[in-house]
Length: 123
Image (cartoon, rainbow, N blue to C red; front, side, top):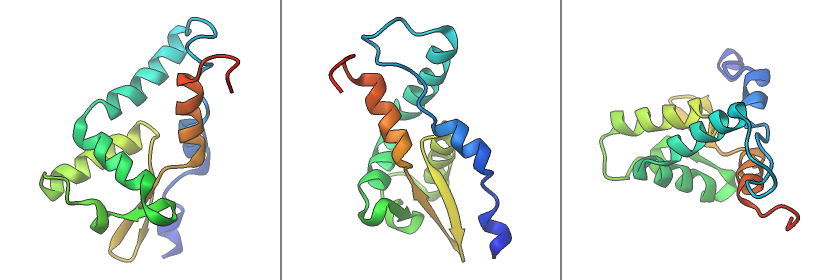
């Protein structure tokens, strides 16, 4: 079972959730910053993905079993597809425990999103 826990490379996860950009009102984004931000917004631009992200983020204890968040009006394979897209965008991380997968939103992801959308100097 410990081999499953090492499936998420720590360096990759840290890179995916590092704050990407200054507040939009501080200065124009560089091309690289815009690319990283667009990946996040594109992943959240789908209503099912946004709902899944919200379900995970607001779940008690900060993480949710896929069995608890699957009822979003689409089939289980579609839920898995959307969760994969959220993980690829660096918005979710996951851990397999037995037969279930648990998802979480790292606090640094929410902080990076908030930083990007906060007025410069307001924080």
